[in-house]
Length: 176
Image (tube, rainbow, N blue to C red; front, side, top):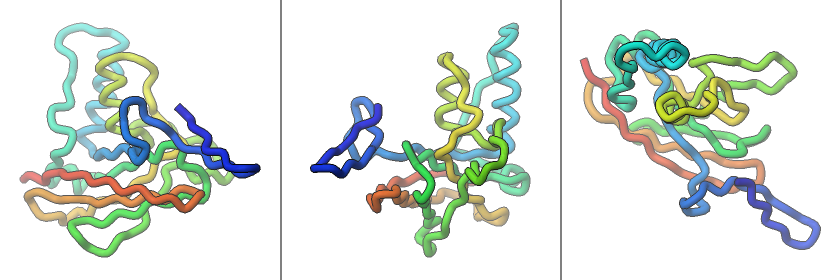
């Protein structure tokens, strides 16, 4: 739900997640070749549900093949508008800017698994509802292809157009 904070003739909008504190303003996930293959299989199965439904077993585990095929961390910054930024610090390294999946410079809308919020889509494809195969407020941070096997932590700092910052952390694992 959109909340307006009004003071005099000034206002600032923010998204309020039902049942969550006001500082919850992001949703993080991993977009990998494994996720994108599941996305396609599950959409096909949902349109003709015969047999067992394809499941996305471990959305926060990626293999070396996933990294080589292009894997990125996604940040859905709720109500993230033009001028908002997202930075990611991977395993304590200096923060690097993430890229917005929609440039918003007059071009067509990017649509499909590559431009989706994996966390939201995993819920939508399993529990029903429209599929968020695009969003105007999604950023991506490409993971290095040579990321070592083991656990990793990404600290994400999102800054909205009003200068408010929100920090969230995603822990994930790289396997052989």
